Image 1 (tube, one colour):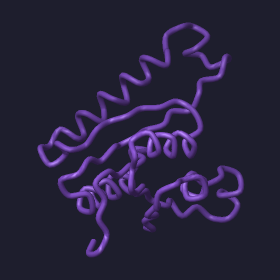
Image 2 (cartoon, rainbow, N blue to C red; image 1 turned 180 degrees about the vertical axis):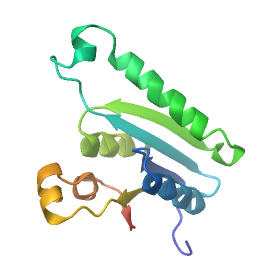
Image 3 (cartoon, rainbow, N blue to C red; image 1 turned 135 degrees about the horizontal axis):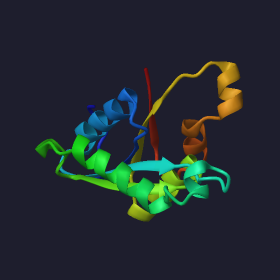
Image 4 (cartoon, one colour; image 1 turned 90 degrees about the horizontal axis):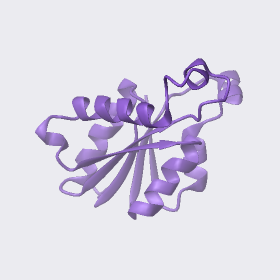
Length: 141
């Protein structure tokens, strides 16, 4: 992308094709800089079966996400990509990581949900744009 440069970029990954396309765009923009990939897990409720029976823990969930991302990003072109996994509100966690890493840019997709689905689910992209201190590039499909 001509005219857009960043040395440190954050890309939220939800394992959708759109989020991996955003990663490719971020790598293009960042060049030799660092791209921080983050996946945010929702908090488990007390009554979830995995939590009730002790078979699923936050640590096991984080390890599974990390392993999947490491496998998916094993190509040498991802050498400057650092993987992060957080638990909590996606919008807030993405912005907190961007602040902590001194990110100059956040690149993320917009899933383009319809009005009613947006009202029910909210929009992570909207929350990030509202809360971020750095520019946010929202890619539309």
